[in-house]
Image (cartoon, rainbow, N blue to C red):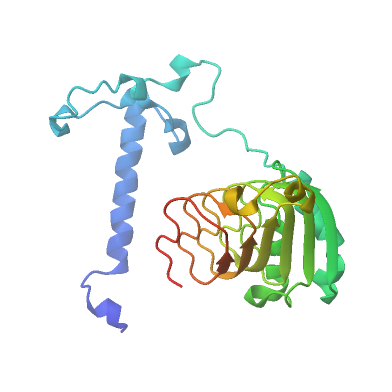
Length: 256
């Protein structure tokens, strides 16, 4: 007998019987309400009412009618439960280009350099490519700098999210919030172009990456020539980061 089983006097059959009885009672309640399936009950808020006995003295004056009004009354043409799937546009993601151009690196570990433009519509750039690396090579990834993404423009939200070891992503330009979130061994660098600097742009006085960069990062390196927004490196637990200034709440809950 396992040690956990010694702590309980009941039998598995007792649990099974409990759930059978509970299911039977639920079926009876559903029949009274006029429903055959759980799916039919979703969104039917007309059956709900406020338990006034449980209200706190501070909440007794709240009018919860808007929350309990069935959505079908507000918009008769709208569904009241999930009826269609969201299209995420993954087939059009920039990473498909990266994956195609990095085939030799993914299959044979041959170093490649991929030069592309990027804009802030390209969100989570590098993540699908990282998936291809991790499914083949696990947490060990590829040797450093096997895949070099040499980009120009404006990185979208969560650029380099969970970037895998072996991928280096450099951006001549700037990047949005959540850059390198969950960094997992890859390298990231964001810097302004020399042309912009020659025109008077001072990197150390300006923001080049947004808020919450490197949130939850666990390994890898990040270099930003300029300032970052708020909550930089929150919950970082192993990545190395170099930045020329940050907003509030930098390095909160960081463990390493």
